[in-house]
Length: 450
Image 1: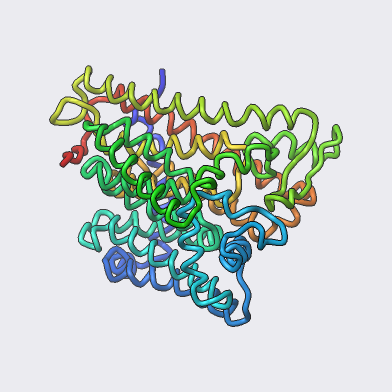
Image 2: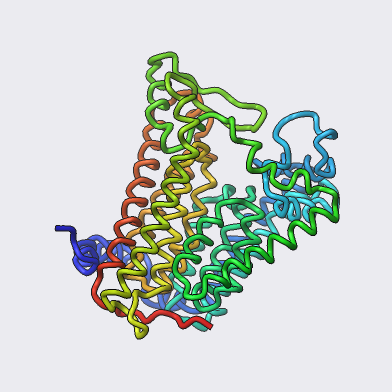
């Protein structure tokens, strides 16, 4: 018999009690009390982001950028016109709204591009933290805010030099609105999806759990209509859906979860497996026996996984109603179900993805951060796993990516551990969804929909 949620929490009590004792030894009580205040959290936010801003300013003063912002800067300089680019990936590998922050960062020319990009990410992170903690008024959410800051720090430039870093705080805000304000949440998620596709996973979870699903549909349609009108205004309608086809023929990326067997075949020099750089899309990939077939299978596998998770979410909601579990309206806690469904779908988008770029880890943080604010005890396990995933990812990129891409067995081991943790997180999330449909009445009331 599987453990109940209560039993699972008890089984991890010893581990988290040890972590608490270690924290108490390192941080005096007075310091802990101050950190758990709005002023303490604000100080932490300023220090974390000031470090990134200073580094970005120093590079920008030298006319440089960092990581993918080099590519974004070239796209902005070329006016997002592929005929003005000398090669490399097309700007239309991203949905059209992703080009807006690139254009904004390029308004003052290529020099300050990187600094302005990091500044935009900082402002969005500030918005997310303010929403998560109700501008510091929700004392119980401050630890969740600290978790978000620590995760942001550990992910480093993967959050500050990629489009993904812009979408993560936007999704966090949408989840904070959640089932209480489904129309606003849906508009935000639809807009974020037109920046990077992954927020569609969270929107699917929202659709599954809200009472008035028509609001979610209308919000998505209305937002997409605005995007189409924008594309028409700039003459880009023919390219509007290019992001769906631009990367369809790419191979298995080095860091992807399902690439792990071929990673080791390459490291051990077995079966002609090898790593190589796909310069057309600026991606390190792995080639070997069966990778072409696996690459073709990954897309339908991802779609199937997403549909199964969505179905499980619908089942948990329906079964909770039948059992009269959880809330005053006779069903499962919809907020908790939204967060569990969002994490499970986002994790599925990572685990069953043939791309698997390291910045994808930021997709997983919004649901965990809002989950910690909603119920710390229920969400501490995935929070701990995600911190471990962030640490492993930091070693993979930017520290030792060159070693990894040259068949270093130690770094292959780190990547394997990270990928195993992702699979464990996915299984935990699936189990959490299942338990929500079967559990006894929840102790945390659901938010009422407006």
